[in-house]
Image (cartoon, rainbow, N blue to C red; front, side, top):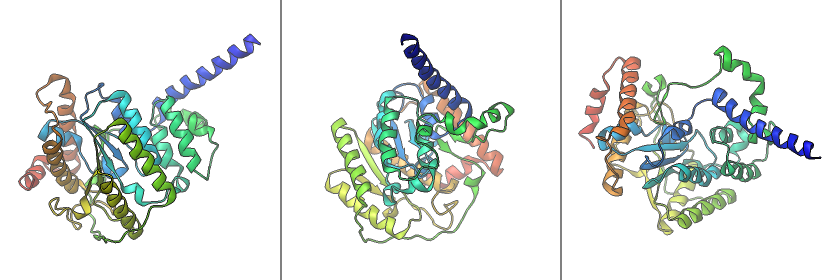
Length: 347
């Protein structure tokens, strides 16, 4: 009996360790990967939300201009049920002065998790194995109705990806390397320009039951932890029903004395729908530069963020900013300082 128990324990521990090693070797990098690289208690601002966070705000530019540090705990189209647990994950490693949370995904149905398994997996696969990760999975999978694989695959991703292990060693693994700069996503697509419509309205539509339940749970946690949080509604093209829901969320949060910035109603930001987007949802490098300059100045002036620019241990931020500028120059054959100076006088 004792031998059987020892075998079970050994097998379980081996499975966990193998899963961790496999994740390091196989899984694609995300903004969350960059978060784990930062020294403990070195981050001033934690940014949470979907792609309208890490594709819109450039932390290396904010650091270069104002000296504060920003890290993302974000993935594309992440389910809103993850937010509370991502804050818990941040609290294990950092003690930021501010959490910034984008609200985009609250405008859409929670069942988006059923349309793409990747929406949840990008978050949970990126998190280190821990009690917090298990708690997130237990809650999130209760909202998920459709499963292309078994639930066990979410807890141990090796069971989903094991048949691709050889790709790790022959160099054909499909990983997005070299496009993150302190969590900020940038590649050749960021140089594209599309003309999109500016859609907005003042109508209100109440949130679906699940969205409201998740929002209230998040707000209760924020209050219980006495966290300093700023909610933002990003500038982008939305479905009409999403705008109505986000209008409801904005009013609801303000009634509860939370700070909200609705960038769709911000004239000072100066985003141009003909020149500043690479697609209907995301800024190109023009929009990123405008938004980062404007928002980083706002954060610096309103949240008493420290300036680390002359401190040796923050040298990696200078290096990442230079790496970003070099890649911009390589892809565009232009000097980034020229683009930066074009907008600096506006902000």
